Image (tube, rainbow, N blue to C red; front, side, top):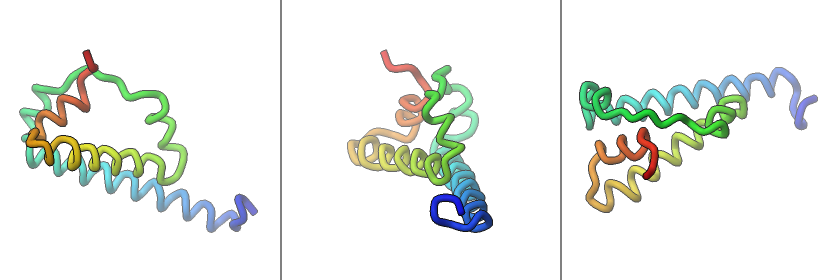
Amino acid sequence: MIVGMYEQDFVAYVIFGLILNFAFSILFGLYLSKNIGMKEMIESKGDKEQSVLVSLTLFVPYAKMMVTLYRVAILQFYFLNKGHSHKEFWIYLTHNSK
């Protein structure tokens, strides 16, 4: 038993978490590209690197999905509700802060 679950249940839980991660990430990317435009995203992309913590969340089931949902919440509550555009969110996400 691993964490109180049988091994096959634990593996299924991990695989489902990874699938949800990729599904949410792809859907969020499609949403942004629909609202900004692929060409505009490529032209305005910065050189900001992901933190090590975000990279390591891929190995924890559902953690990467929670990071994506956190980014969606930041987009909605901070940017869109305050009158900023999707492009400003993209620039915030991909450029180093000054």
